[in-house]
Length: 72
Image (cartoon, rainbow, N blue to C red; front, side, top):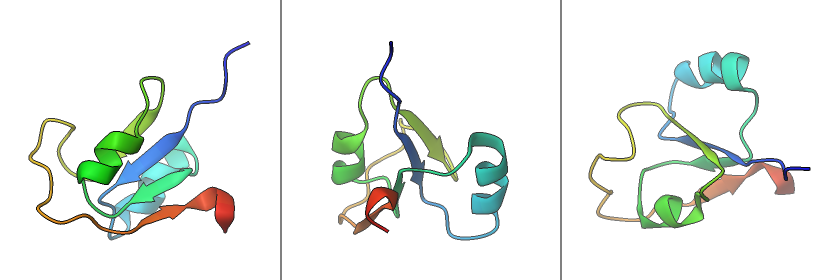
């Protein structure tokens, strides 16, 4: 039996969040930016949903606080 994968939303600031929510379901982690912390948190079996771009875009200069839905 496979462990459940973690869904990460990255860079969502507007109504695109709700569009992604309808398609992929709720995220477990919300990363405000594509930064070093977000890159480190995403595991090999996790799913990363980007508001814009993909994992090949440059990392943000500064890390942002993230939201872990498990603790809300």
